Length: 284
Image 1 (cartoon, rainbow, N blue to C red):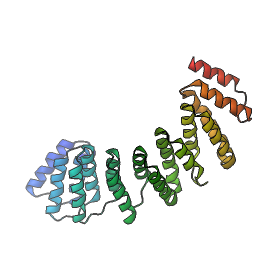
Image 2: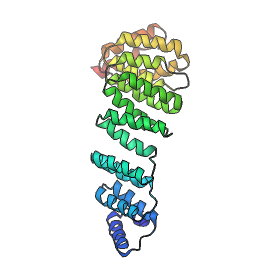
Image 3: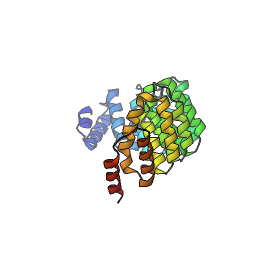
């Protein structure tokens, strides 16, 4: 079975496995789990579930990868009720969910705006000692921002910072972009003002500044640049360099011109003539 799956011969594998099953030759639990995983990933949920039932019937030890593959396939097909049923069956089989299991369901619940279900699973992860990763946090935070539940999103992000600053650096970028998409620039400014120094935030500052310029909020952008210069001096020039590189795709020339004039007047950028000429050519 493993050889047939590895070589992508799914139909051959399925027929071969059925023959082995009918003849009573299939006794290796690893083959069962391999077939369930393959069929799940191939979208053949009914066949995968039949094999999983055979595993239970023979009282073989369940494997979390089989449940994950089948659950992911069910979620892809928007079969949420069977997915929830499979979740319950998993526990009765003595199999505990891992990070991937939680992420499959949380991501799906977030996608269809089932925020209560997603939040319950997120809380359950902590109770069971399963640490969320970037996928978990970004799914929940994006969902909360879309629902304008900004305080809850901040609470989730705070947990992320406490858990793992490296994960928090990646999540922060997504969080700031989600806030900007909702037009909540003050919320984004507030989040960035409280970021500890051990959380990488250069990209997040650039995203916020670029979004502010795109909507013509030049004054807010300038105030944020002043704040960065005072509070994030070690990253300041990197942020400005990244911002300058991103401005060529701005929606309008006038806000860009105002910002560049300010940066030049403060000695932050120099020799802006050729650069502005190129920008004017792009917007001509």
